[in-house]
Image (tube, rainbow, N blue to C red):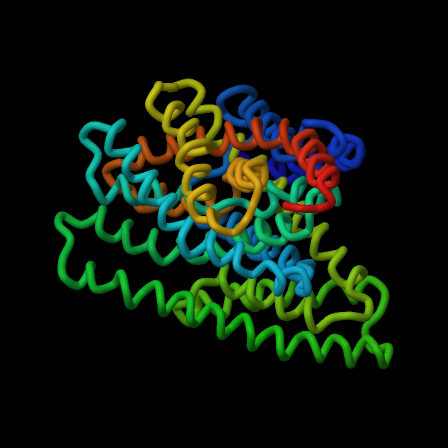
Length: 405
């Protein structure tokens, strides 16, 4: 297939969607769902005019850069005043809720998948633990939802994928080897700390250099017009690429860098970030299109009940029970606990993990890909349909009790 044909198809879909995107944002139909369907129709399972290689490095790089740009721009938009006021919420979601989610996901896999190794079960649970900042955008940007809940979900989704990356790499190494060694087990402490530490340091360093530099140059008129949007994209990719190059987590670097960059950028902040958000949205939709073309079709053709059931459990009990437990004692109402638990969509991070697993050819690859894929598909549909109505209903309820979350 000609690469020009692929470019033409993707560009045509992007152009047509852009004409109605603002209208669709007010409906239950999300951009991710539209692009998955278009990718499915254009992919080899239907018309066969778009067939990228899921094992290829290009798709992996696309998904990784997409996630990095989205994380940077979303965290740069965070309200630091609100975040400082509600910092306990994301801390609990990350330090208590995330490990509990992985443990419960492991238990569900143990009960459902006969013959799967214990390490592969742990890998599956970790692949589906991170939430998606981009797919949850309809909630975290909805003014009806209290700012404390929005910032808590935004920070959680920004950091949990970066935290999970080093753990996933360890599990992939263990599941692809014949038996876990002492060296493998020792990596559980060293590797995550190294990845998170290097990622955080890189993110801080890039932001401290890029933020003041952009402010000074913009004030003097050295950067203006369309050029003012370029530094944000470059800074996001610089965070990601440098951290990965040095052995850290590029996703942690992108989120931390964006958070500090946003805090240091006051003048022209909206103008600076608009370009990054637009680029992130475009890359996200291309990733969803590729996912629909190369993953969704084969999964529909060979559907089995175990992945579907696990996907349903992953989006409900496996996510919602840990959230309920970890925020207990914070004085949150039951509807706030349920809202936080339900809006943990799975998306870009899990797609990145699918591509990583597909490239390694581990024994349980087929089962892992099917289960993760169906979880993402159901998440796109269910969270897309419920985002606006539930956010409006929840916001009205909180408002009726004078903003008490």
